[in-house]
Length: 203
Image 1 (cartoon, rainbow, N blue to C red):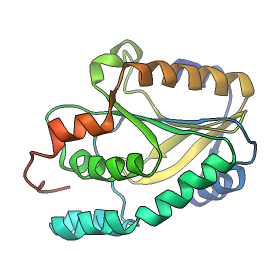
Image 2: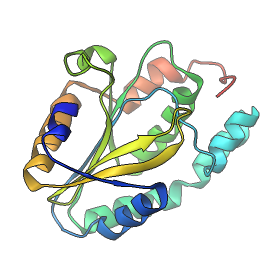
Image 3: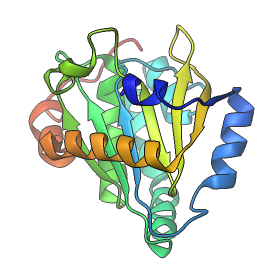
């Protein structure tokens, strides 16, 4: 994935600028799917109430807060459908699961139940792209936008690099779609690998 991004210059945006730019472009053009590739095994999400509960060790509350977010996720899926846009995500998962990924997979299962299309792949599926380091976290929007999502050393969102290039968007979407085709549906993966686990400890 890095090879594709390096072929097209992008503009680095700070955290607030990235979020504002994303909101301004989201669903701006109808009929284009949004593809997301998520690679890191640890993030920090201090703005998320469920994540905060998870970090405090309040597992039951963390899951309840995920469920409480379901109406908002349903609204997002309906908005995407009105714009003829599918929301598709590929989540790379390493074994054994980190506490963060265990928490996030509960969230992703609910997202899938609300309409997002999510599949899980192992790191072996991206090994060919990681000779010089992990693949970047990326998301496509509309017909011409790719964001590389940036994080600090601790895994907290730090902004993004915006690429405005229709050909790049198509190449990134095609590569993520190929990985999606290799993946396992979140539901079956969750039932086999996540549901039997004890609550995680640590973040």
